[in-house]
Image (cartoon, rainbow, N blue to C red; front, top):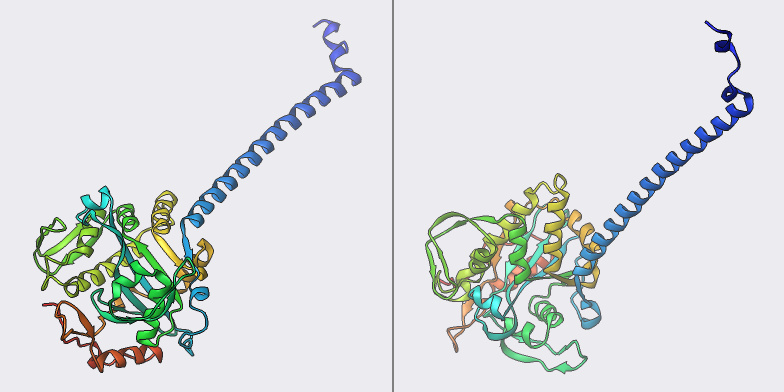
Length: 365
């Protein structure tokens, strides 16, 4: 082997070695800097996406300042930690989409087709839902509309007309006056959004109690279990001509049954296992909601939902406000006494509801 092989390599001189290390170190720093920058961009992008998604869901929720509209002339709050919610299903019958769904496209405006006072006793492990028939004749108290104008009190008005004529705050005030129950929160579900929610969760299975052939809504179902999509579900909760005596009373049972089935289906969904599906459901749900100011944010609504997590939809009790056919107009009903007074008293006191308070003289066939 030649001695040249052992001769010092000029590139291996101390000076060149330092330069080489500097180049290697600089290149390594550049690589690390690029990696860190990429991670930072991804974090910022993910954070930005998360913020955008949160902002979108949060912005979907519409709020109504019930407390401001009603003032201090209200029943006292429960002396316990129990909660009372007024849940309305608002239904716009205008437009081509609603007409196609059998909603009657020639009718303008929005109506409160479904109304439930949901009482969650102290401990929040159970609940009872009291449905108020839309055809119930009530005394509407003096109310202030959203534009600041005042609407005088009126006797013998249909319960569902209060929403369309005066607005949601007056519905809350009417319920509080007729029941003496303080409403803690207000939740309004728009039926068009309700349809999208049912489709987002993949449908809801209900056990149809009897054959339903409703030419008005287009609903045609045989008795037994059916998995309904959004359009079918909307027709199901709307139908009144295909069951019972054709009045509002006949469909209240269907609405209560469907609500429990919907809650059970949502609760059974593996939302943590599918973030995309969770967002789809949350987006549909929040787009369909109007709440009181206390719940009109994603954070507040989520905290409230978590506080109700112990309530099992399968054990929720559903009751129709006891009503009797009106003596002047048999197409309308009025609160039956003393059953209604006993029912509302039990809710005010966070007590068990006597069986006698659940019996309604008007059964709807």
